[in-house]
Amino acid sequence: MSETIIIDTDPGQDDAVAILLAVAACEQLALACVTTVAGNVPVAQTTANALRVLDLAGRADIPVYRGAERPLIVALETAEFVCGPDGLDGSGLPPPSREADAGHAVDAIIRRLRAAADGLTLCPLGPLTNLALAFRLAPDILPKIRRIVLMGGAIGLGNITPAAEFNMHVDPHAAAIVFDCGRPIIMMGLGVTLKAIATHEQIAGFATLGTAAGRSIHGMLTRPRPGSLGTVGHPMHDPCVIAYLLWPELFSGRDCHVAIATEDGPMRGRTTIDWNGRLKRPANAHVIAEVEAHELFERVTRLIATLP
Ligand code: RIB
Ligand code: CA
Image 1 (tube, rainbow, N blue to C red):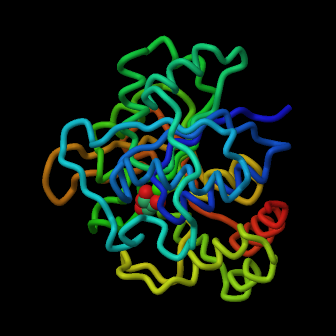
Image 2: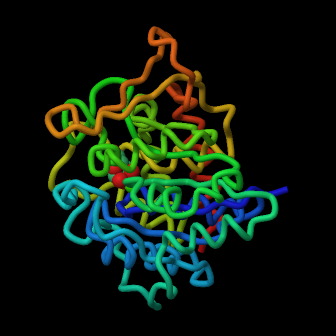
């Protein structure tokens, strides 16, 4: 029985690899649609990028819905200094072959959850604006959410600021709404994604697959980076979300209370993770802290090899 998912995304090179991985895992995952949000780059570009990546995978049949232009309250901050002007530096991908599907991403999330007899899993890979809007507009959809597996937050240091990880920093108010929704959340924060670093040999392995997907991933992972957020190598943050759905045995963590700092200032977007249960508050997320990185990339490469 495959798990039906919606990927909400701000491509971004690591989002692109996550989407490719989900499409390659079509026996275990049914990708119902992709919804886009402003984050790494503005939403017009994240939408074009999602379409470009699905073209690469030969899956132009998967609907893409354009979403929020900006966070709920704060001004949009993007990260072209990390991912390049179009957000997919190094991918070598042509412009998209099609337009996004009609309708807003938030309406698509609501519509598809309402219609899902067995529920859906939400996989947000960017700022949580679309999910927060959907939860506020249509709270009746919450019981239809099987689980939320997200990339965001940090147990320790942030990346875009010392306190916060980028997705949480960009829209902290949306993050607070999502972490308060009461549905099962698996949180892939920097504490684990910064351990998901492919070795040089594994990165080189993508180029030797002899496929367009392998070449594009190799180009994204070996591009000279205009800027970094202090990380070594090319961390594959977002693919950890899809990998968790496929191979949860490669990950470990614990149930914790997670609070999101929404006030403006140096702490904005901070995920305070009560790892040792000191606050005596109910856990609202399963926070992942460890990953078997080498095995992860061995399996990712094998799955990506099945793409054209
Ligand atoms: O902080 C890393 C996260 O922010 C990743 O999802 C990356 O794609 C950006 O969205
Ligand atoms: Ca992302």
